[in-house]
Length: 116
Image (cartoon, rainbow, N blue to C red):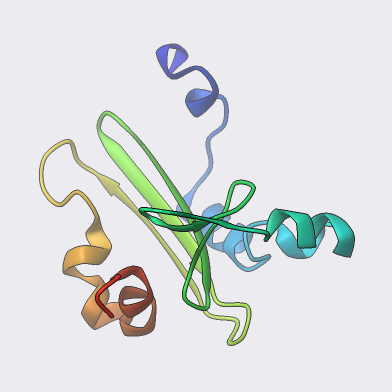
């Protein structure tokens, strides 16, 4: 995906994404001081954004998309729970968690919903 620049510079499987989610999106692999810097967040419309990570309630998450697909991964450092999904679609739900999330991942869906 040359036209995507950095967005096309790496690829993996959903299993890889889930495994990375288990490291709290790489945070657990960093020295404590660097991890703390990464988790300092600023409020934006999608949640509280840090260095390549979004805090949504107790969850740490990040997603990405390009024409034809999207993916998201999240972890809950308090419980160890991990959510990872990928959708191969250019039409349909803008965010799978909007439709499936309340059933499959109720705690994560509630954290993503600003109305609570």
